[in-house]
Length: 288
Image (cartoon, rainbow, N blue to C red; front, side):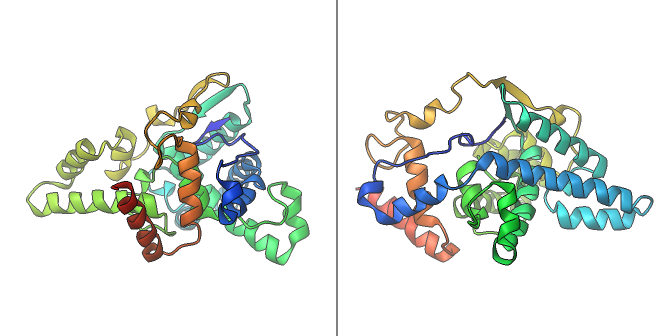
């Protein structure tokens, strides 16, 4: 099973404040209606099937194939060719279907998952509006549209693989980090550093992982980064999310997962300006 920032096998997430907050309860009801495992599976399977079809149909026409990759895989095509993307999709599907282990993704793989899910969610949401009976065949939701921006906020660790690239959604919490890093790199270049030197300095200051640095340097994925690292499904890799003594929550005694859902319910559907206002208010309150 693929390991994201939260446990995708958790089918009944809840929040202790639902009873006192109708908006939060509505948000958690929305979360409980999504079958995350199936959403990921169908996203990856759709991407693999259409990539294989396109490779077959455009055999010998590299320009057309590159055009398709740029459209279907706007993030991951920058670091991998069609054969490598196909290999990665197969690895992801095999790992996702293996229930005995958790498989951790590096940022090359997260970028590919981002591409696959972004494209599939658009198709799925259109089906719900235009052919709801067909959407039911996937078993993902009961004719409920998926908010991709919200899904990424909850289940992605970061969007460091998109540093320096335009973000197609609000992605507010990640956008702030990426923009800060981008500005830091730009100032480094303006001060006379090479782009590589500025990126390496940013990596130290902002704890950017090596795989994200490789992507930021526009390098092609190598054999080392094609590996998926696994651990037994019996290992409690999400236990820290429920630790009320971690100090990561907004309120005393609040665990990280409750804080995450509460923040996400406040940001869902907001523009960048609206989200900025909400987060600024949270930061103000946290200082008192």
